Length: 266
Length: 103
Image 1 (cartoon, rainbow over the protein chains, first blue to last red):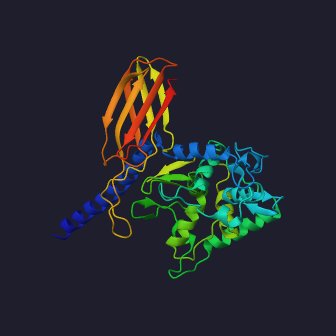
Image 2 (cartoon, chains in turn orange, red):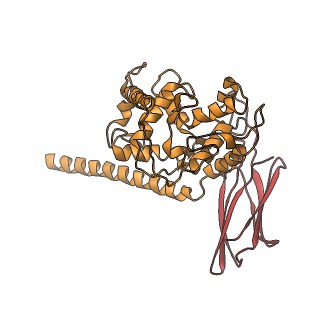
Image 3 (cartoon, rainbow over the protein chains, first blue to last red):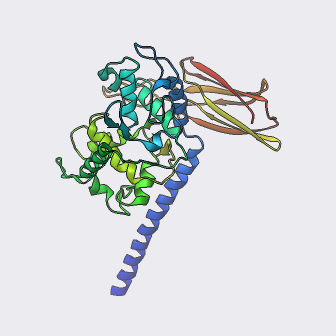
């Protein structure tokens, strides 16, 4: 009798394990099927239009914006960001740099440049997300190469690392609570282990992404903002030094991997 | 005014494969907003595709089609340099037509 129970239990465990791997496989198949018609392309096209349009009170396009490789150079720029910009004496990620260009070149106020970073359907389209989609798409296939040679870049990396492991909030969470062990998942979503090279590379190089469940293209600033919300942390301010530092930490850990976004996620 | 479509058309042998990405909310009319009011239906109703002016596909769509829909279809014929034109009309009367050259 005892052995019969044990056999049934073993079968049940095997069944669960099989269901898990096949679910992961099925999600991979689902992503592959969607990749061909990734709606992120709609954002890329809109973003390219915005990039080339004269805008703001000063009627200047982003084509004079220096993303680190020279004014208006987009190709490969994202694979080297965040980086230190001498003209601003600050480390900036892409979004922060775009805000900087909107303020210093296009004549927007800082508040206007930073409002509406994340879109919500047709009612609230975000130009920021579209421009980010365009700029990042121009780094597709290019290897991540964050130098972090300037002292301020190294500072940002160290601060980002501290933030990643910092526990706090009502749930005593840190980024590392979910992202420092391999083979973990939340419901059906695999959690990347960001403390190891493969996990960090796969995760960072596939953002921004079109979120099918939201019908929106989401940027890396959004990813961090939403992680903070999930951790019940205070809201992460858009383009803040903290968000840049955390991006610096995660981007540099992805060095060497070919950038592969805008991607598509469930 | 709706955002442009992304259309790609490729010919292999005697068959042309067309892939279209449309930008549309595709609201079903089944959802409610935060105040409990029904969000009115707003979706593409008619889709037409032509090859050098000749219709190769017509479709009637409803609320079951996803937001930002992706349409892929094949037709016999077509040569490099030919024009493929796709148009849609939604239930509010908004329309959009875009074209692509077969590669």
